[in-house]
Length: 482
Figure 1 (cartoon, one colour):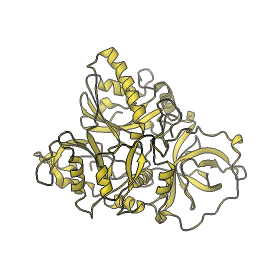
Figure 2 (cartoon, helix red, strand yellow):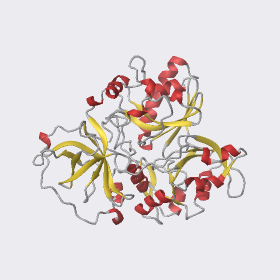
Figure 3 (spheres, one colour):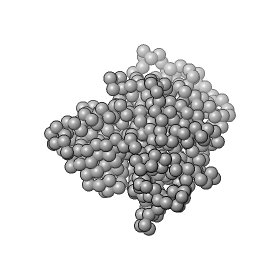
Figure 4 (cartoon, one colour):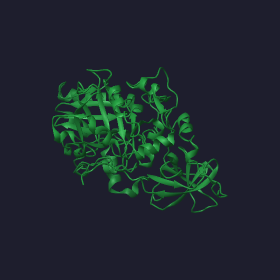
């Protein structure tokens, strides 16, 4: 990219194929979590929708949009891992569920899902995201490698700035995972990948790094998986107000969080409860997965195993400002913000252009003669000729009634007597922020993706009207320079 293009409308991302690396993972789309996310009566519509008296054309007669065949399971084989904050979750009455191989909080005893969602929009919530995989890549070959496996102009990033990007499958350009990449120095990068893709990502990165080292020497790249760091996300309009008093720095310029903008990071110490500075600095990044202003805070534990709990308890000290939040609120918040969840809204079945993420491909990386990143020969023609895309990721607003959930068929109602399947819903729920309005993310046949296009969604054997809507449904409130 010619400039830092941080997150616009999509972050986080139905695995499309099975391979030896694709082991089942828990996800928000699992049966258990879908049931929990839809359990609150506060977002259920109060009136029944009118149901069109039409039937969807039998599947044999449909030429469906490319569908995703493999989905992450709700269960987990083997014992679940625990984050550094597991005991704190239990102490706060969290309902723990399997997620990406971890025991994670769905919601807490003090707030329902909808209450927690709205608390985040109005005040600030603290999410434990320590299950995510934190990486540090350094050395003279770090930039070259990352620019091979992602399409982003990482060479244009200045130190301590970040961008949303994707790991790309060689040959196809399919999205192996979405990630946030931060340039820490000239040859130093910090990035975070999804917990549900840990096995696949680590195998992919190991293979790419070994191949690079074999050509350029063992010292050309150093790769560390930062297992000794917790990760929490403080999100909401009061996030900066809650964090600011804790910052402990001799530099007034660094202490002022108002000068830390979206997509930037700083290493800062915080003041602990006993008045001393934290033994190590925390990496504080102004980013998040809710559409709200906020921070992701990477907390080292090598000098103090209890530091993550100390940080969280300090942030929770004012119960009128900050509360804990779990997976349920995180999912509904990110969907309202138009952000993708891997394994549902994006997968190896989609390239960035398919997924409306073509903007992550750097403008200076779009010349076919010089483009060397994975899948460039597939991705660049799609960017140059969008009409060649077979499917498009869109937002849908669905009429009152039962919400359109993942897997629901999207149909073309241009011939109401014979609606034809033209897509599939990948995420959907009643929007807490919009008073229960049904929203959904879906892939539809190219040409039916324009705003205002009227379609239908098959919900419980009934077809409900749906309108293609621009995303996000709730405008993002990222902290940017005035």
